[in-house]
Length: 145
Image (cartoon, rainbow, N blue to C red; front, side, top):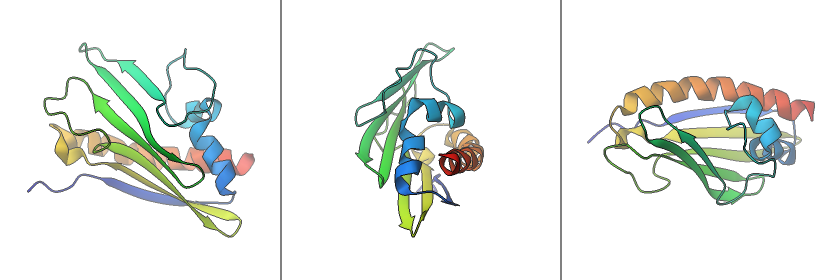
C-alpha cells in the first residue's frame, strides 16, 4: 500500500467566510495566488469551471471545479492528460474548506492524493510549497477586502 501523499495546511484569516470565498473564486484575486491563462474570463469561478494549460510535452493540465459549496468548500479536480494512470475525477484535487470562527475564517487546504500517480512525490513536494505560499497571499487579500 502506497503512503498517501496529501498536503494538509491551514491558516486563520481575519476576514469573513464571504471575503475568503471571493478570493478563492474571483479570477482577479485568484491570479494573485495561483496562475491563470492570460485569456481566462473574468466571471466568478463556479461548479464546472475549468482551467486548461497546454504542457511542453504535448499534454494538458486541467483543473475543474467539482464542488462549490459557497463559503464552505471548494474542490478543484486536477488531471494531467498524459499521466500514465488516470485517477477518477476528484481523486487528485485541491480542496479549500472554510470554517467560521467568530469574525475570522479558518481556511483548511488539502492537495492530493499524489500517491495515485507516477512521480507523485514530485507533485507533493511542489504542492507543499504552493500551499505555504498561496495561503499567505489568500490571507492578505481577504484581510484587505
